[in-house]
Image (cartoon, rainbow, N blue to C red; front, side):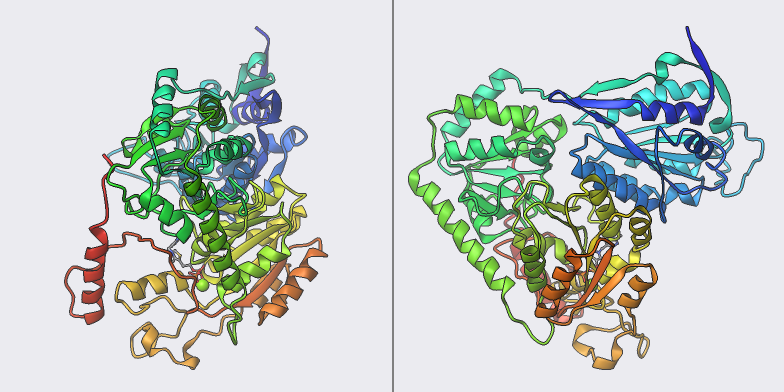
Amino acid sequence: MDTVRLTTAQALVRFMANQYVERDGVEHRFFAGCFGIFGHGNVAGVGQALQQYGDELIYYLARNEQGMVHTAAGFTKTKNRLQTFACTSSIGPGATNMITGAALATINRLPVLLLPGDVFASRGPDPVLQQLEIPHDGALSVNDCFRPVSKYWDRVDRPEQIIPAALSAMRVLTNQAETGAVTLALPQDVQTEAYDFPEEFLKRRVWRIGRPLPDSEILGRAIELIRGSRRPMIVAGGGVIYSEATDSLQWFVEQTGIPVGETQAGKGSLPYDHPLALGAVGTTGTFAANRAAREADLVIGVGTRWTDFTTASKTAFQNPGVRFVNVNVADFDAHKHAGLSLVGDARTTLEALAETLSGYEVETEYREQSARVSREWDAEVERLYALGHEPLPSQGEVIGAVNSASEARDVVVCAAGSMPGDLHKLWRTRDPKGYHVEYGYSCMGYEIAGGLGVKMAAPEREVYVMVGDGSYLMMNAEIITSIQEGYKLTIVLVDNSGFSSIGALSRSVGSDGFGTHYRYRKNGSIGLDSERAPGDVLPVDLAKNAESLGARVMGAQTSAELKEALEEAKSLDQTVVIHVPVDRYEGVPDYESFWDVPVAEVSEVDAVIAAREEYAANRRAERRYL
Ligand SMILES: Cc1ncc(C[n+]2csc(CCOP(=O)(O)OP(=O)(O)O)c2C)c(N)n1
Ligand SMILES: [Mg+2]
């Protein structure tokens, strides 16, 4: 057996550089590179290897370990999970900074490889700087915190262990049903130790990503259920997009006349102006999709994991006899809501269904109703795009301006705050990859870092990062990384001086916006919305902050100024931040939907008592779908 003497880290870097995936006959290099922030826990191991093999695997310096995992997640989501990045960190805080990113990746089913440094396997320098000491367990380190947020976790205590660990990592990363964050904890001494690695381990390896079909008997039962339904609807989730099944979906719905509601990850499954596109479904849904959901007797979920936002906390589907058919590569999701579980790839399964259903169509009246309500919804979008709110624009108008300025193939990116819901309702998606909202973890701080990943994956598209002031303050440092690497982002910083989303939620639970506005503490209190005064607001200047990071900054006080700034931004090739103050209280309404956020059962505050009564009434509509 031919061997080559390498350190653990050198072998891992060379292994990563030679991993490929293949789907539909097309090969993709799986690791586009490795992000990292060095410290004593990785500089001499993984850092040395990345320097030595820099031609094989490119190293990217990030600013925040959480941010670099978000960048990897944004990248792989844009690449439909066929390519990703590895992320290397030091031990201790560098490692634990990645945990939020790991959770985000795992929840969204996005493959990212995390390589936190770990304490000495030899336990020589014990405790080393940043080592956690637990008196009853010598084997624990902070990296054990990655276990619940990883789909595969390993600690490499001897150099040769990297062989099975790396192969297991690839198995999970490339498995469409299992994928998520994978963590290989690398003790800092082991990273640097040498071993005679078999050449075979380092050779080019191609992981095939198949398109499995469900069991034919179950497929037959699904056909019967569809044929027997009068008001079927489809809920399209992220799986439609990852599987590149949007054309098949369109073919299926045009043939059958079944209308489509979209989840956050599934938005873009159909173009917004398709007559069978009812838009967003659920808590942040349109009246078009939510009315169809209320009456549907059969719901076909394709590539969705049925979160509470999609089901409006299980109030969306009210037909007493409603049944679910779930098409999903993940058995776990396919079984939800007592659904008939079609475990398979979205594209091949939709095609198999369409072929077998040929000749079946919903009643003409139902098809026409879908087209009518879809048009009515678009008129509502138009109304909110052109609200003309003064003196500051509404958030809906800002979304309208960005949508109008963008080309069909450009991408909008968002994650947390009031914007994801508003974008879900209002963004007119014209391309399957045009809408990128991270709403599995809805993680404040994802926007800019994730947007960088989107741009790295699709440099030919303009990337519009829509970020609230709260999210911006949590994580804006990857602006510097975007400038360092020459990836332009157009960042629309929507400023309402605090957490308008949670402020509105607070008002709806009777708590008057308590603690959600950036205001001076006065008389010992952080303030209620009903007590606000003009001089209260803190003197924060986020535009100056963005400028100091090297971004080109423009201010826009009105919709007209915003449109001008967006046009100017298009002509630039560097990262731009457009700072837009909006009216905090002019929100986009909800459309016949609910979200279960429990309200205090007893209180001395009248508004809370009233909110609790309303909450109890709404909750009565929650169902179990058994
Ligand atoms: C990391 C993180 N912390 C807390 C939350 C809860 N949360 C959701 S939205 C939000 C406020 C977001 O503020 P901003 O970005 O200004 O958006 P706005 O609500 O004003 O639209 C908070 C605190 C979260 N989603 N993520
Ligand atoms: Mg805000």
